[in-house]
Length: 73
Image (cartoon, rainbow, N blue to C red; front, side, top):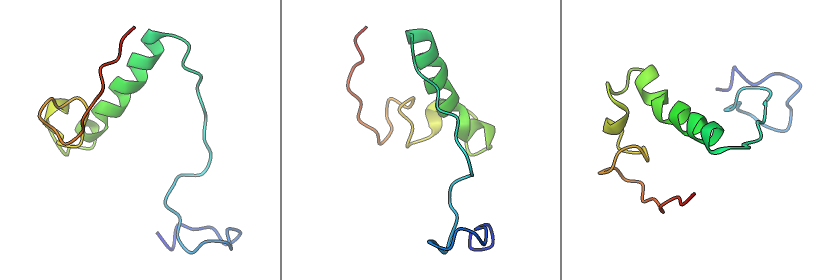
């Protein structure tokens, strides 16, 4: 992570996050669900688990380590 930090970032030694961002306004339940699905599938895409409900730190896992409040529409 030290090598990834560009020289012009003199205020820090390491770079953890990718440069740039693209915020998206969540304007509907469908967009909200799409973002949640994308996040839930990250460990599957990386090959850490073969099913999104097997990642113990995922809110998609009903037996995982994350406690959730119910979302009411």
